[in-house]
Amino acid sequence: MFDNIFIERLWRSLKWEDIYIKEYATVRALEAGSAHYFQQYNFERPHQSLAYATPAMIYAGGTLRGGETVDNSQQPS
Image (cartoon, rainbow, N blue to C red):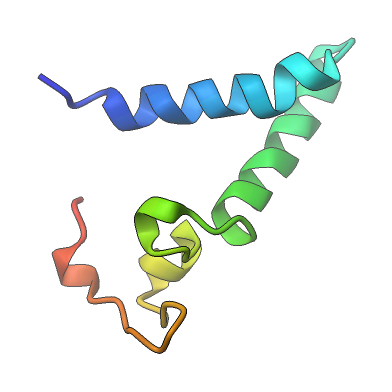
């Protein structure tokens, strides 16, 4: 029932935090801007739902802020 909820939220974030603000003039500019947004979203931006870790940290099994480690076997696939 809710299998698309996470991807829908991701696309909403992309549109409201990047596309609508920057109003890209060309498809090439949109592609470059989206690539930059996803780089920042996955590797630099802390996420509240991930205990303020980045998705890349969770995927790699890194350490969360405060020293808590992430067990990737508990992450949904």
